[in-house]
Length: 177
Image (cartoon, rainbow, N blue to C red; front, side):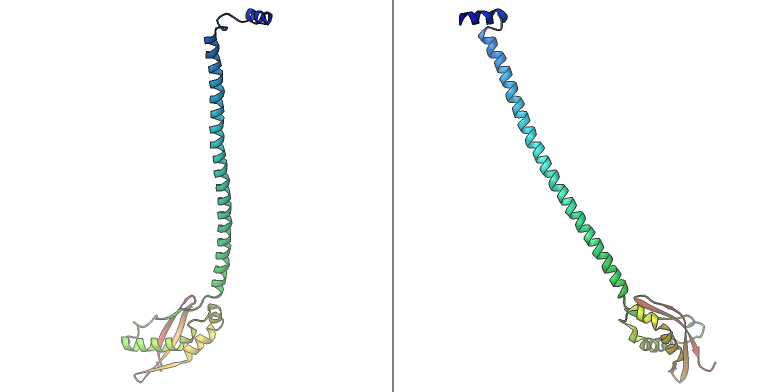
């Protein structure tokens, strides 16, 4: 055993063989190993948390994108159905020549109300069916004679706009003139 010690002592410098220096270098090596282990553990924990968070966010983004696609497709289908089922909500009658005839407001109002009462059946009907029967509606209004204060008036429709509000632009003509 002494022989091996002599061989080892021959190869090692004398300042390393001192127990103080050996403890110092051993402390540095053990401290480095412990520090590196602590660093790897902390880095691994942080990296693992980041990966879990990233996977959760990716799944959430994917589910939200699917939900958005579903909502957009449902909205498109619903819009198409609503366009098919649009109905007339209101009827408005406008006279283009009421100032030219010098009619009083009461007479104009009564003619307008008579025309509106003739067109009242159109409210809450779908636009497509009203469009298909608009010629009949125009002829019905134009062939009707409105009697107000012993005077006879005819209404001639010049323009007709169909949407949720039916706009009727017409001219009033005194019968017999």
